[in-house]
Image (cartoon, rainbow, N blue to C red; front, side):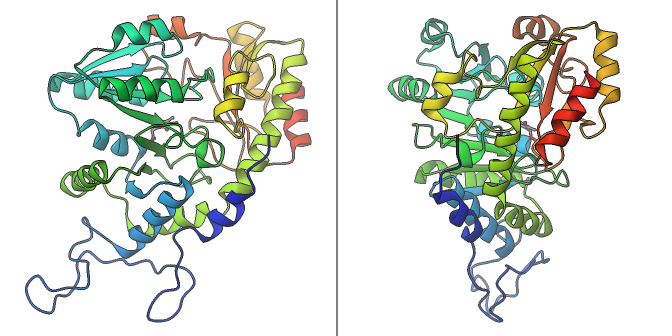
Length: 381
Ligand SMILES: *Cc1c(COP(=O)(O)O)cnc(C)c1O
């Protein structure tokens, strides 16, 4: 699919306003912890940089703009942003979570927050009957990740958000894989969108960051308080660089998606490949729903290699343009072995159930020339 034309101008101007003193077109990097006051409590709107910083404020305006949200909040990592959402909850709350969420999200819930009396239920959110059965009056939140990682499952956000609303629960969508360019969860009924800005929003594999967006005044007040009170804020330099990255988000996503479609089609016809997971393939089980709720299929492609684990390793080592590394969403193409790398912390029985085995390979398709990506994959296969 194509990037909606509105995004190209939107991302360039998001959050930008000439600086008041000099007219600088880019926001200055305000490397300051504190701000001089005229008399106690009388200041220019800033008193301490954990609470507010002008460079962060400009970046947060940009985050809100690209997600068509009223508010954006920046955090020091994707998981710090997720943690702020969990801190909205009280002991006794139940949270329904996609069973194939990002490995670190599952670890945060299972290893850190379950012991505070929050009950996380991991279920297959594509299974509508299981979801209805799990939903009880104690359910305060449903946590969705779509497309999922690493098998690119597509979850019906509109359906889940309407069920959640009736039950009085919040819907949270991790929009890291689709990006605001290809999916608008708030428009589909979600209450909060979370991003690891480490990935596509940052886009250059040089930073760790996270973000939340919402259009709900009350939720924003609570989340802003948590950001201030818990303190997982990014530094001004990071805010500047992430704001700068947003300007190229639409052109980058356009190229990521074009390349990923060609790569997925080539792989799906290759004799050494058993199965390809990419919602842009018309044969993919999530294709119809993805076409309905997304405006593009993004740049992540997974596949099952047809050979033994030894052959899989040989393939990974033969690649020259794709680098073997964790993470995703940067301009350079990466290849990852979920079972041994990104998803090693997922309990083994769940890994088997989700289809994360020795033959599964995940590609973060970069913005290089597609011919170079195709010939690299072909020579390694
Ligand atoms: C990477 C990632 C996270 C965690 O973000 P960090 O920036 O690594 O803390 C959360 N969700 C998804 C989908 C991710 O890919």
